[in-house]
Length: 258
Length: 215
Image 1 (tube, rainbow over the protein chains, first blue to last red):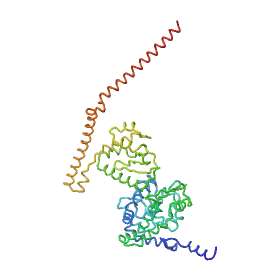
Image 2: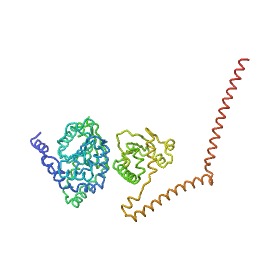
Image 3: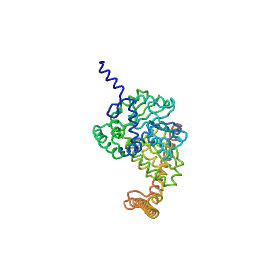
Image 4: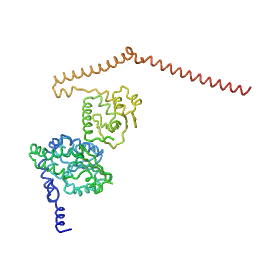
């Protein structure tokens, strides 16, 4: 390896994607926090507008795949505004527990208020946590969900290993995330929508086109279906599989701890 | 194999679940009957669509419709869309279940009870209409809807009666029930007489054979 190549590789190791730009690994978390601080108060409204309400269906299917039942402990990482946590709270009942975790305090605050408004209290714990270093005991969680959060994590492999550690043997991980459309035609339409319409909507509704441009870019930089499944297998998950939804715009990946 | 996009099916199930739970909320009698079935899970496989659905009766006021469930269903039924449509519209679900192409695993009573609760559901439209439109308009509209439903029920019964009369009297295409029952009785009686005659013939043959041996 030449000196030039070695320097380039070192630089590559020290940097990571922030949308389409390369930033210092240390800086990404802060920049992502900035995006979500900016959109937190209108996050759900924007999600409804951006997806035409379809994100609720994607989440509903994820909840079905969780097979959550009374008495279980569910960890919802990047749970933000708490819509999955509210549903899980009902499914696990008073003898179960739901942990709503997010790295972003502003999103957690909105989520906590919303859960109280929905009457979902008593079995929900709200924790500010980094997915790469989850502050929970080994083998303590029955099911982990992370919906539209993994692509914002700096080191996804580290986060997957951390999730595996806290899962109980037999426990499952569900990753709901934007992915790669299976049809090239749908892919082109989707690109137009993401890079033209999405930032315009962000400008109109959240007065923040840049944050929504980041969201669109981060989706394109996120690993496709098979790559993410390979990453889960490398982290140690078993029986990994995925379901494409809405033509592969979104996929839900599932893996179990042996 | 048909590839279904989960989002489309989930959308249909979410809409159906919402409509069903809203109807249940407005039908207090059905709530009591449904409560007796709470905890029951029914699985339905529609073979013509290559589709599996689950109905989870959470409580007397809540039913969940799902396309994925890992619990063992109390009853699991498999059949074509036409079979299920016939079962849903049937006045006698037990007979329809036996005579149709539907395959059943588990407890048939759960399925029959649920079918009866849904078919008997008496939705009270007045409360939400009054809430949305006020006492006077809401009540008037509810009365109109009630009259319409009673009329359509009456019209359906009348159509059924008239069709039956036409087939029997005018078209002479089907025999009257009494005539049919008399015919079945006659066939059964003839069958028994033939059986008796056959036994007597066999007895006589055996007797003749025995007398030939002794002589």
